[in-house]
Image (cartoon, rainbow, N blue to C red; front, side, top):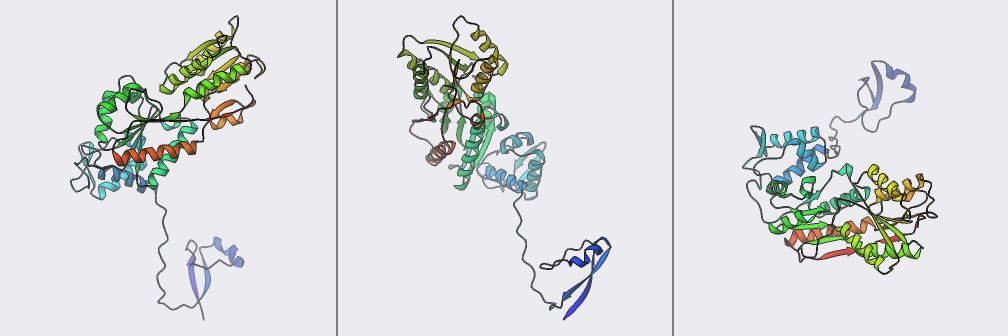
Length: 400
């Protein structure tokens, strides 16, 4: 009924067999005796253990999908650029490329990797795309938490419906002269559907002139025939101006960055429109370069005015936090001596004390709306230009 076998110290125990506690002290020796029930020699083979898909395999699949979609027909981007696109490390990219080379899908020609003629989609531009490229002016680590959440949710939602999502960060594409950078980018992705995470008029005009499908996550001027989705900053800021007035503030400051996007321009217009209803209101603009040091210096200069503002409306959550903490550093009590209201929300603002008053929109709702429009744009190739504006809600907080 039983048989004795001698196992080396590091031999794996058979499935379902646990070591005896009495023999625990023997484990340090080179071998030990194990008594097993006699089994027929013709046991069925064990089923293969499921393996978790590795990041290298996922990266290889992503590159393969690009090649099959007709991208990179003239050559793959450099490893460093692929790392940025796919958000993985260089060793992971290198291992994935080596895997594709072994499969015969790409080959190294000189210093450039190119798709082989047998690769599906190589040398073709295709007519239908399942690739969505998201353009951002800054890398992921420099983006806000809300933006990261929306991008991650968007990628997950689109992946479930069969879309490959590519992320490309390049501030030059968002500059006043983006043509060369955009031409190079589109040449590598000839059939992508494009999503711009905030953009300026030069980029928008370039996509219009080249008849490429683009959804702007931000605001466009009315004369630019592109679809866009954004918060209704005009209505929000008009409400903010009236709110500060009703709380007794007659001298108001609008704090915004010098390098403004379309939504920031709508915000300024809406805030001014709200104050136009109150002729006694005085508006002071504080335009900073985006750094805390410059913003604090401008705040100190403003506080030295004979009649400094008592109500501060701030564009963007990080700058609102800077304004609130600097005013308290100057011994101003919020909201007794000054009020601070933020146009935007970030998760960390709920941990401030006093709680910062702000406007907020559910990021899940925003991601679902964006995903729906992107799918329509990818499937149809174009959309009737429309501006979708979402209304955030006021979180009262304790600073107004």
